[in-house]
Length: 117
Length: 117
Length: 117
Image (cartoon, rainbow over all chains, first blue to last red):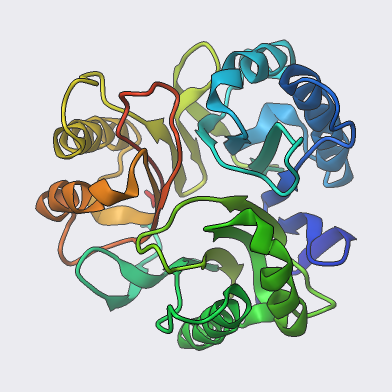
């Protein structure tokens, strides 16, 4: 029998967090304060992700893989500054950062993750 | 000994579906009818994915993670309309939707998934 | 108790390779020789990935899922030529290839992977 799948915070189109076995999938997460800079939006996104991971009994020391999308790749330094202040220095995940236009024009950053629990 | 890997529908560059343990990976899937609207292309892609998941003994109630790429993010409402008519309302996956130019200019949407089985 | 997570080649922001259970996550990998063509950059990236996978006791016959980002999707044929010369013909992974601007303007290709071990 397959492991059960546990879905958290279901909304109109997606669940914000999905648990399966010892894996946790975090949906693409964006900031509510879309007038903020890329750095400040990243700060907000990472705080949101902390809360989501806690819902699954996981935390940022257990991130395996992370995909970061930036509206403007030239703002990568801003994202990296927020990231460096947040990431567990002993447990850095694999990551890719690329440019993509996002759902609203003033969204500067979107982050998804696959974590262990 | 590692679990066996089962690869379905191998083509020139990739396999359309890969099973490993209780995980199923669906390749980036696009519509054949590229003259259709984003909504209609999404309908076709999701029907293709139904068939692929069935090949692995999975189905849309077991999607864990989904990445949607749109040629024009302003067509997200069209994709979401097709998605809403298809997704299992009790089993919505984690998802991210971003804009990327795709392999052919008239391809409006490409979708990949990681599912449970 | 959860499986241990093993992180390889930690750098400023990320680890180049992360092992968890029988899964291996390869970070977005780019070429050092950024004056090279897309084809040559892909050749270099795939050689780097061979070395990374070996560090985890895996190899290209065990790739499950691959995401390729190209700075210019019109160079997909160049990427595919390098890919075809490299991929294990009996073990092609699920894959998606999309266009995204990457961290430096002369980077033509970035590749991430999820593999079995």
